[in-house]
Length: 45
Image (cartoon, rainbow, N blue to C red; front, side):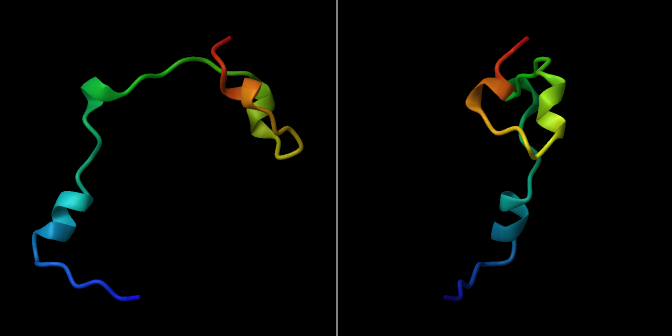
């Protein structure tokens, strides 16, 4: 499937996410291993 976008439409898709809408928190160091796969890994610690 191919899509054709007007010039400028691509630039809007590549805009950075607004920093005021971002959230960050510390997570377990277990996220560094592909052997670990559980939803709890991304819970705040």
